[in-house]
Image (cartoon, rainbow over all chains, first blue to last red):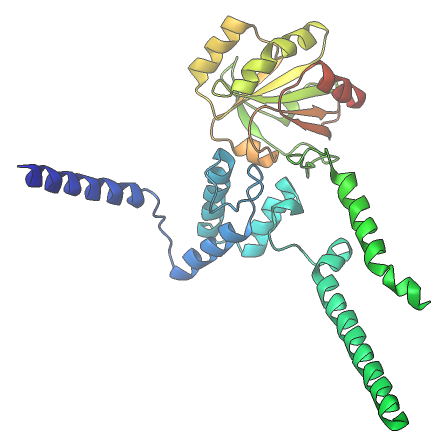
Length: 140
Length: 168
C-alpha cells in the first residue's frame, strides 16, 4: 500500500517537474541561434541584481530582457544589434565583457603591463645577484 | 635611493587605501542612467483615462516628473501620498502604470487619489525597457522639450525631491 502510494507520488513528481521544465524551452529556427541566445544571456548583466547575468536572475526585468534577446534573435538581428540595444538603454554597465576604449584600457591591458614590469624586475634582480655572486667568487 | 624602494609596498598600500576609502558609504545599487541627456524614446501607449493610444506629443510642454508605478509594488504605495503632495504644489507628474492590471490600477487611483496629470499603461513593460528602468518605482525629470534630465530609482520623498527640484 505504502509502496504504491510512493510510486504514484513519484509519477506525479516526475510529470510535474517535466512540465515545469517544458515551459522554459524556447523554440529556435536553428541550433546556432540557440547557441547565440545562451552566450548573450550569459554575457549580459542583470541591471537589477547586479552580480548576476540575465541567465541566472529571476528578477522581473531580467525575464523581460531575456525575452527581448530571444525576440531579437528570432527577428534575425545580429549580436551587435542586440548588444547596442541593451547598451542604449542600460549603459555599458550591462556588459560583462567591457568594450575596448580609453576608459577601459587599464582594465584590459593593465594586467599585461604588470606582468611585463614584474618580469623585468625579476630578470633584473637575478642578473644582479648573479653578478654579485661571480664577483664574490672571483674575490675568494 | 635604495631605501626608497623599500617604501614602495607602503606607498601602494596607502594609494589603495585612499581609493577604497573614497568608495565607502556609496550606494552600491546606484547606477547612472544611459538616457540622461537623451530625448525621450518614441512611444505609443494607451492613455488610462481616454482608453486611446497616445504618443510623445501627448506629454506636457513644461518640465515634469515621469513616474513608473504599479499596484504590486510596495514602495510605490509608500511614495504615493508624497506624490499627491507634490501634485498639490503644482508639480506636473505623468504616471506610467508599469506591468500592472488596469482595473486594479484604476481602483488604486480612485481610493488613494490621483497625483498624475496623465496615466499611460505599459502593460508589457516595453516602454520600461526603452527607458532603461530596472523596477518600480522609478522617477525621471523630463524637460519641456522632452529631454531626460535626471533619473531616481526608489521612493520619492521630501529629501529626494530636493534633488529632483534642481533639475525641474
